Length: 264
Image (cartoon, rainbow, N blue to C red; front, side, top):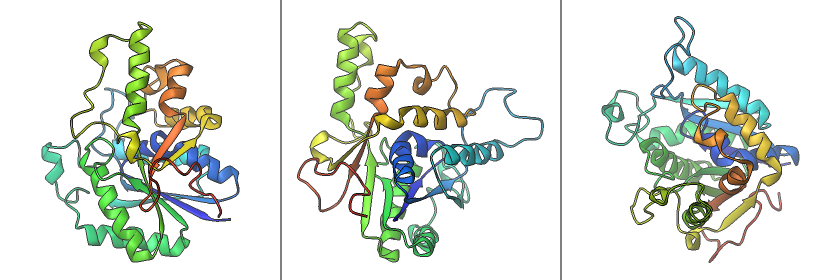
């Protein structure tokens, strides 16, 4: 048995980005630990959704624990930083925001967990945080440094496959399912994911699609039934979430890994 620690920015990120590999690892007998940098204080929620006196972060913490149970997680930890909001928002600079946290300080918090768990594998995000969110970028910086401090050699950067996404959108346009204007501009630096040529890992998690959807539903304050994630047809959901993509330094060129826990 090995230990997988998966590091995320906010509640709900875990099920979207790595829910499949988490449950797969758990089902294979590995220990899965979820670490979340913030409690998602800046998330949006419909009026009347929260109970009187209830704070959003309280709901999101409960949702995280519910989703973690679905994903086979044995331990959930929050690093204690505040949600920084989207890039360029005033919340980026709020006291205690993850974006303003000294990397060395935050990395030591995570490294302490990695040491305690004797982590074999750590997942973080790519250097652009997947899509340019400040807290996601900070997860990359903090996670990579924490791995150095703790001596965790096997680190995977969770990301998206920009070319795979483009092919899916183009196919949907050809089938008349979405308008041509929906085709994303993949030339901008804040595009979702990385070019396929930069990826080194592709894990088929189609066996866990219903698990991923169930974990997403556990985050009801952020992922409604009519949201992009849950409302899409099964075929579209499988294309979007049936493979989880990674970059591992020193691997490649090209996609050479199909299991981040292989050999452990």
